[in-house]
Image (tube, rainbow, N blue to C red; front, side, top):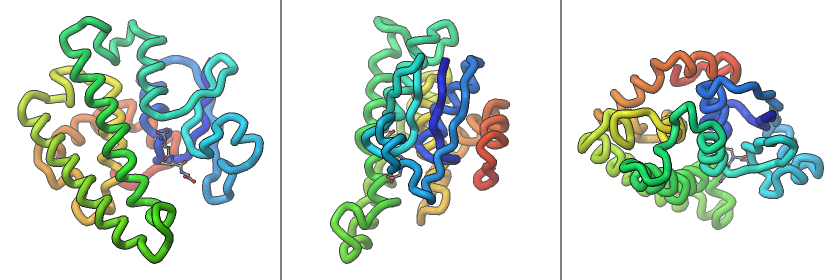
Length: 210
Ligand SMILES: N[C@@H](CCC(=O)N[C@@H](CS)C(=O)NCC(=O)O)C(=O)O
């Protein structure tokens, strides 16, 4: 059994989306970030980093969006959301999962929480740096989609595509949103056309970028 501790539109979005796509039973537990519920002693027992998501898997609390996506695909191999070990796409799939987790997502954190990096006095400089790293990542993804596609790794939707789309969504109010890159814009349109995207939006009560 799964319980996802989530907050609408945040890093729990991709995990929630994959759970819907998998069609497995799960419960949702909303975490009110504005009220600081993610810093309470109860929540920190589940996730000592004090962030969402946390996925409780058969009683064990686990975290890190990318790890949760990889774990879910491993637990439900029949759904085919990850290229199996030894298959030709596996290397590229892992490369992109880790690339998003290690480059783009940390740059997003710097963009959204610039004060935490070097204090409020340096927030603008931190945001500028984050912006150029984020836009460089869109350039790399645009090239990857242009070189192959129509998905991030070949012609199938893998878990990494839910992850990438979530990160693209986060750029919607940035100076240059991901969808200003043409191949990304059509990729996003295809991902948003999946029926699961509507279900996710409805459950999380989201409206922006619909
Ligand atoms: N590396 C973590 C980062 C998660 C993360 O940054 N979550 C944000 C929401 S998108 C959060 O909980 N922020 C609240 C805070 O940092 O106080 C993951 O991928 O799960």
